[in-house]
Figure (cartoon, rainbow, N blue to C red):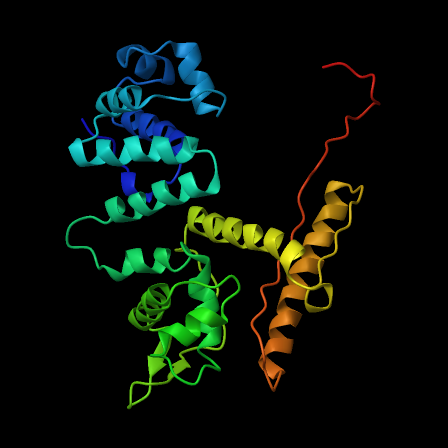
Length: 284
């Protein structure tokens, strides 16, 4: 019997397994992590570590687990790709798996725009092209648009971006079809955009930031870092300040004139060390 969950709503196979087991147990079907492992022919301790992110599952093991959970053939294919995506190492491998998940997650008859909304964040240059179209003379001059981006993209990529933006209703062509206007001055990822899509976009922008550190003249960039010792409360205050700064940046952009470039601003705060309470000699 199948679990009463939407398999295609998941972007982490571990969460899917845990929720599927809980859903089956609500329907009086005896399932636990241990029984799923045994019925799948997997050592229970290895399976437990896989659910904690400490070990990997093979594709064959993933298929067996899906069968024990009662997934159908299409859901099993999605689950197997989900395992690959969760375990993938490196941005490019993650991106390839993620795009395959986007294609697979759409049930038959679903509105195609749903997948396209996720796809907006699957390429770093979609959002940049959108900004360029505010000021570009011709939206159909894909060679010129491509040459404006840093790093440059191919003209066919520029065409792809413009077509997607039109399809999503993020830009509108004028009557002549040569120029575009933005439907809204700003966009933000709402609750329907999964964290996986945002992570993919942010990772790509971080890669570009590394290139900018080397290839963009210092006077044309501003990259600064601070390493701080903070309590959880202190970090919360920093996070709040960063959110406020983001709003102020939008105000600056909304009121700016004589625009001559598009800039991506990364605002980040993340842990780089954990300090044990009680001193360095404390033992677990």
